[in-house]
Image 1 (cartoon, helix red, strand yellow):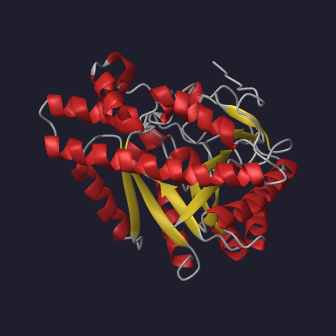
Image 2 (cartoon, helix red, strand yellow):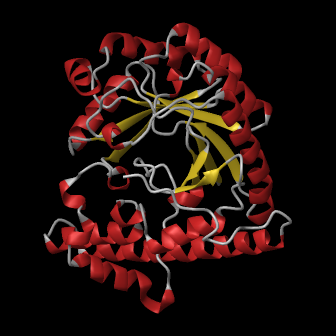
Length: 348
């Protein structure tokens, strides 16, 4: 078991996928060296907190909302992460993964790379606005070079809602030496991407979902802000990677630690403002969506009941873990700041 600290070394991207609402991001940039060094130092400090509180391992991911290879310092950043004895991963669309860059990343010690490429040939070029042949060659070559050194994982976004297409994509890449895959449905990026069936607050099922998840005093809690901690390219802590509109800043790495912003992060998750109320990862929204599917006859009552139990059990586990973290923080010299100390920066 491990948690991930995601350091966004850029939120700029060279692709134009319609399922990534880049236009909804209010500001874009590239993380500079000083900010990265401070972010990594905060990750090192928090690893000790996590070790003391839960015993979990910590992985550092160079990802965020953009294409990491746009940042000219990516290779040196990987070296720095490895020098601190973290497992280091990154995400990429593969278009900039040249032979030279691949070798540099492998020599730097990169452990995992998640490559997002959900289409091939002309359809890939139409959706990503990137050249397919060179990207395909980049990925195939990296898989060959990486054997025994780094694990490439193909990420397949099911933006067509077509399982057969996903199977076809997986078969295509298996023929080219890729062995690990992960697929997921389109997500609404904290509400930044309009998805017709994810307008949760319009649905009467939301009241039912909230009541069922809160029964017996359970507080519905999402695990993403705790399992995937996020530092933006600007050095600000954000609630999680779903905050594409960068509405929920918890202050800068130059001023605060991960531990110090814990209580404000919890306040945001509990209130569901400003991000969670529109995010499809929020447990109330997840159950709302499945209740609607049940009422439409698309899923069974047993399926919804299993999800309900899973979300309630997950919320209890998160609550217990946060209780230990808060207790640790209150006894720690650094402490945890009150929830209202750090101003929430909401950008429309």
